[in-house]
Amino acid sequence: MATMKVTDATMEQVVQNNNLVLVDFWAPWCGPCRMIAPILENLAEKVGDQAIIAKLNVDENPVGATKYQIQGIPTLKLFHNGKEVETFVGVQPLERFTAAITKYAAN
Image 1 (cartoon, rainbow, N blue to C red):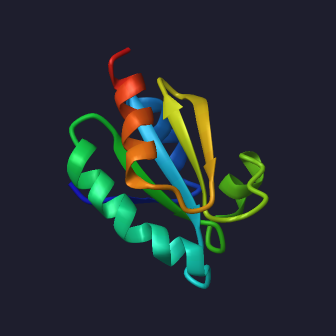
Image 2 (cartoon, helix red, strand yellow):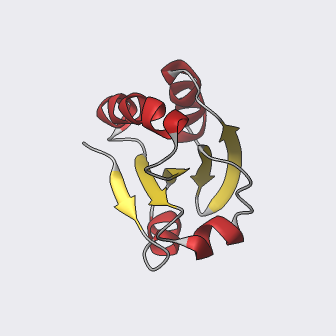
Image 3 (cartoon, rainbow, N blue to C red):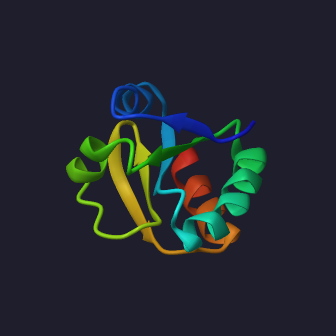
């Protein structure tokens, strides 16, 4: 399973209708965002049956970035049953995301 693109119009529905969603707030001009992209693709392959890995382009979707008070990118937020449970700022190793998803997938 690949990462899913979400927009201001679709993000809330994806977050509310799925058990676990990791949202990557990113922009095409952001170097660290490009560095983390293959990590998230790999993550989607590993945990695609447990969680949705979504990407929100903050340049095209300023409402979501404002609502979740995104100060810098990449920022990733993990939602469990529609509630924000963890935030990751900057490039993180695959294992950190995998561990967080595994922790909440059991609930």
